[in-house]
Length: 267
Image (cartoon, rainbow, N blue to C red):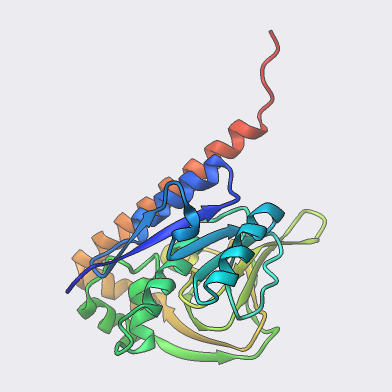
């Protein structure tokens, strides 16, 4: 099987965001396709990641769109109000969310004969390293669920018995501050997974999730998934490696945030 290379241009991002994008590109690459960051003329890239909050970056994108309306694009915005026509991720950038959207871009370029459930699991950040036989077992132990818009999937502090793989639609993930005001952490869409940490450790949810549109989900219960890991140690090791990579990315982002927010010491 030949490996397809997709060149990526990141427009309108500061250095730390560009560095995170490069790290995620290396994680998203696999045996089917690889991502390569474009240095120099980013307008020639197959896929463009655009800071939609930057007017100059949007101007560059509009020029590229006039030349090639079919060029793939991922918008990053604090609002993400682009409907279903374009992929959009929330700013500040979150590594796992970007990884999920990048993986779906790879899915669109091939493997159309693979059923959607397998495509989504195989391209997801959490299950990206698992073999196809392991994915078959996970699909077999999961259950499909269709929910209407504005449906509460789970609330903060609920018991975390299941994780949700999003096949279709979008959900909002949020927390409540000390005054009870909702703080939206971001939105998630096809290819992304929510609730996996609470499902794995069996503790309460750290956030709430509500459907923004009608959603098709794949639900994986802790009582089914933990025996699967016990019976498939290779899958458990692959899962640990992916979680460790995500922790490294999140730790790096947190460290950069703390450095930025900490005032310089007085002489």
